[in-house]
Image 1 (tube, rainbow, N blue to C red):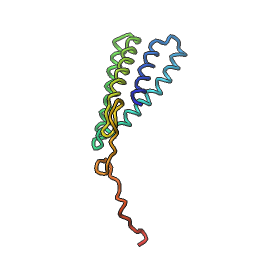
Image 2: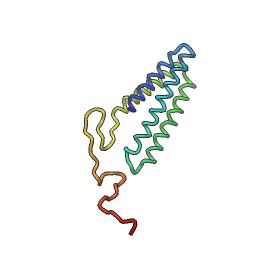
Image 3: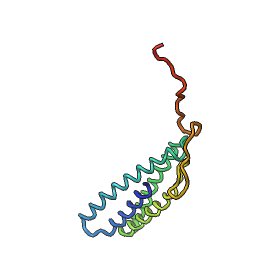
Image 4: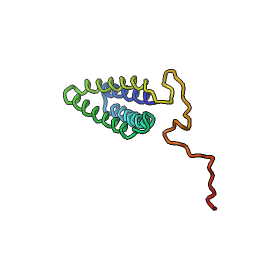
Length: 139
């Protein structure tokens, strides 16, 4: 789903760059914003599966990536014509959607090929409680 969200986001940036009317630009911007929020949510949704003990560090890296992208595109808008900056931004987002196609989460199949591994009790990040031990709370 992240690949789809990023692809739609990048495509809508390119459509926005070529929109001639204010009304059309507002409509495109609304749908673009929906896909931006969905892609951000899917990025943070992947975090706990990458390396469970390092969840906080990985979330920080994702946040820092967003900040560095904002600085880079801010410089692009400062030094280029707006249409050119939007085209570069859209192409960059489309390229990241292609790269997200190859994300591999341990224990899960990839978009192309592979099989899901069924986690065992020993490989779970959060151990399941023992069901054999039953205590009588009224005793």
